[in-house]
Amino acid sequence: MIGALILCLSAAVSASAALPPQYERLAELRAILNDPTIVDLFDITHPIDKIELMAPDLYRVSGGGCHVDVSVKDAAKPEPIPGPRSFVLLATALICH
Image (cartoon, rainbow, N blue to C red; front, side):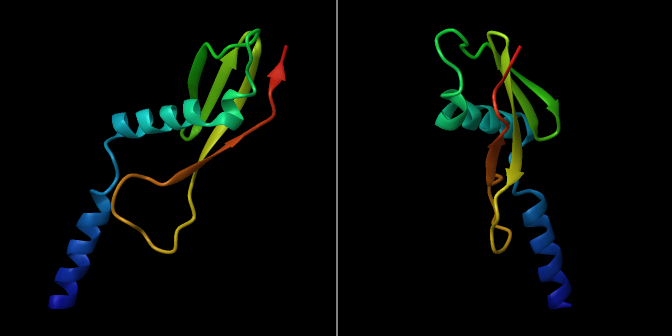
């Protein structure tokens, strides 16, 4: 009985631990704009002018005819921790047309 109660409570905590989608999206956009490895790909002739959500966890950062695709991946962690999603950003090479 107590084990079942603990299991139910832990499931409720992990289900409610993530940020609401609108705040999660903002966290991802801020992380992209604060990542020097992504931002430094663009320069004065190719400033960032658009960030598009292409698919879940996939953004396209564009500027001046160039773009880079950025994937959002869950950060490795030993066990689930309540709170906002921990993630890392993986960017492709800059592609210019």
